[in-house]
Structures are given as C-alpha cells and as structure tokens.
Image (cartoon, rainbow, N blue to C red; front, side, top):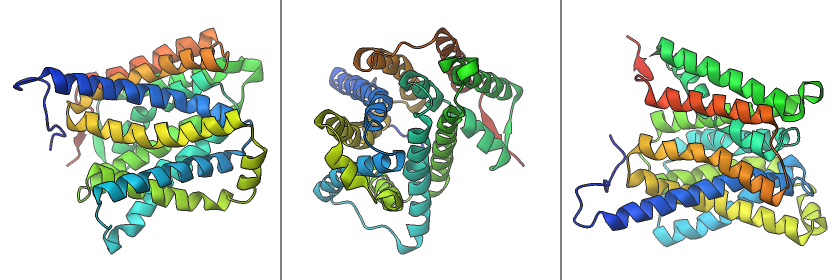
Length: 307
C-alpha cells in the first residue's frame, strides 16, 4: 500500500501541503546532518555507550510526552519480542556502532558512510529474504561499497587509517535489518506507535551502560550537555516525527531522494561548528557512495520475489 495521504497535486489548495512537506523535509535534513556533529561533541565527555543512553533517555522522555498527548495504543503481548528486536537494531546496536565508529572517523565521513543503508538492504533482500537482485543492483552495491572503502581509507590517509570507521558500516547494516523487519512484520502499528516502542525498548537495552553516566554528565561542560540535549530531542525524536509526516504526505521514493543532501549538509555544518575540512578522498568516496545509492533507487526495480 502506498504511504501517501495528501498528494502534491490535485488539491484544492496544493500550495500549503507542499510548503509544509518541503519545510518538514528541510528540518529532517538539518536534524540528521547535525547528528554526527552532536556525537563528536558528546564524545568529548561521554563514553560511546553512555552517550547513546543519555541521548535516548532524553528522546524517550520526549516521546512519552508525545505518546500521552496522542493516546497511542498498548502493544500486543505477543509483539513484545519483536519490538525488543527492533529496538536493538534501530537504537542499541545502531548507535553503539555509530558512536564507537566516530571515534575513528570525522563527522563528515560518518555522515557519508551512514547513507550506505540501501546497499545493505539490497544484500539482505537477496541473502535473507531470497529476493532476486539484478545485475544493475549488484553493480550499484559493489560501486557503493568501493566508495565506502575510499571514504574510510581517505579520511585520515592510508597510513593512518582507523578500522573503527568500519563500525559506521555496521551501524548502516543494523539500520537495514531494522528497516527490513519493520517492513515485513509491523503493519499492525501506525508510525508514531512503532517509533515510540522502538525507542523505548532500545533505550532499555542501553541501560547496561548506565554506570558512570551521571558522573560524566556532571563533569561535562555546559556546551557538551547542550549538544547532547539537542541530539536527544531533534535527531532522535522530532526528526522521526517530521519524517513520518513527510512520508504520509508525499511519494516515498521522491521524498527519500532528499536525504542525499544530508552528507553535504553535515560536512558544511562540521566545517562551521567543528572546523573540520573533509579530505579530498572523502569527497571522492562520497560522490561514489551517493551516486551508487541514488542509482540503486532510481534504476530498474531493485528486487523481485523468488519463486
């Protein structure tokens, strides 16, 4: 079923919905472009696991307020294991890998590698869900992985390459698994309900990193804690709500194309806030990755069900 409630055209007053969708999309891009910058700042005072927990505690409280205001339904008892698995892949594993990975790569490079999710989604479609993947898609996947390798090796130079950058790819893989599970098993829940329970379950799993977190928060500077607060509210909560609005009021594939603006926006923000200058090879790798992912989405139909 197509996820579109209010199309761009054919409305009595098409201008207002279109403007709202555009503004919501720009908001999402800015929020998710800030994410690697906020992580970089937060890692100055927090361990990676502590930062993930602090970020999603803030997001969980915010989402609880939204959930109460909207009166979301209780989950089915039989769905609790699935919601826990979704929380593990979307929140716990994804953000632990992301935070540890950003200890080894720049914020700009991390934003590029994080966009490799569709590459892993294609691999999962073939190897796990037994879908047929054509030559075009295999070519896009191979080119995209080559671009990711260029980003990882070029961020600090071949001689000073940090393998922790590969953890960003693990984070992208984790998000792909989450997306696949969500697509195949969660049609009984609306977007807001699913996001809330995913965030809450993932946050509970992160409590293994609670020791020392409050001490780190007390010792962190006000600017670092402000960056983490922004990280918890905007990329982790508001951006998901805004993105749900975009998907409900526009064509999914067209809206998703706008997300390719996240890496260049993140690089610009990292330059302004962190004084980072992306290496030339990172720029080259970014072009390869984004072009491959774009070609994967706009080329021939990605997958066809086997059998």
